[in-house]
Amino acid sequence: MELKIENTKAQMRKGVLELCVLAIVAKEPAYPTDIIKKLKESRLIILEGTLYPLLNRLKDSGLLEYFWQESRTGPPRKYYRITEDGNQFFAGLRETWDELNKAVNQCTNIQNL
Figure 1 (cartoon, rainbow, N blue to C red):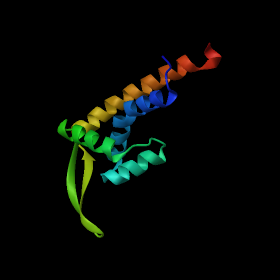
Figure 2 (cartoon, rainbow, N blue to C red):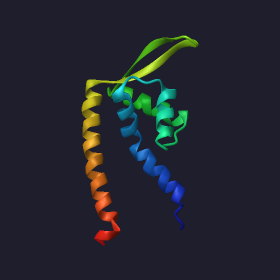
Figure 3 (cartoon, one colour):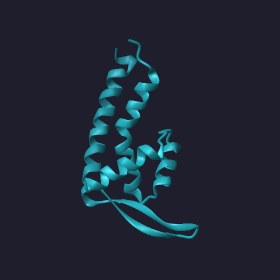
Figure 4 (spheres, rainbow, N blue to C red):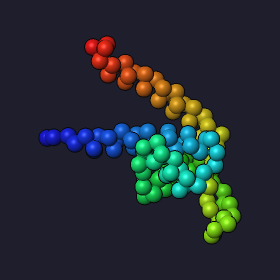
């Protein structure tokens, strides 16, 4: 069976998506379209159909909450912000990511082989 690099890349991106969404919302409350834009700027391509279930899961877990804000160009918008539990969870994810990143870099550094 042949592995496709694109499938592996997609799985890797999905694995860090929760961390990245929490990082964006930890900086400031964000509208979903703004979250998608920031992820795309970081070369993490995501569709609305992927983001909304993730936002709902994070909200249902108590890591995010939302509020409505009036818009000058249309109906009110739903903005997401991180909760205190979300900040603690994000800190733990960030620590785990830093450890994992260091370990992967060490394992894949050709000079160390």
